[in-house]
Length: 100
Image 1: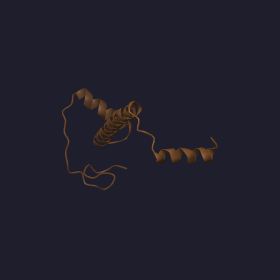
Image 2: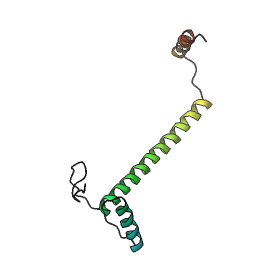
Image 3: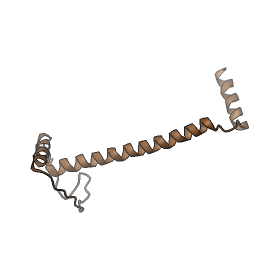
Image 4: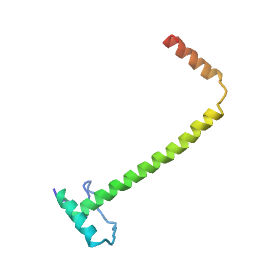
């Protein structure tokens, strides 16, 4: 089902514009790909760019989290906190429940 260029599949009005200059070869490639998916060029470009943007943001967030978590893990290994009563009690309860 074709969508109007001014509304998205969720019914929100598209009011912002995004423009770019491309080569004729790029245009032909994009038009061919859109046709193969039976989509308008606008819909094809928008969904492709949106997915690429989401993927980029997710990869960046994973990398940020990974670096931060790695640093915290190394810090905990190099400078462990002393065992406190709460941890000792937790270990004892675990051993009683599991028989270890």
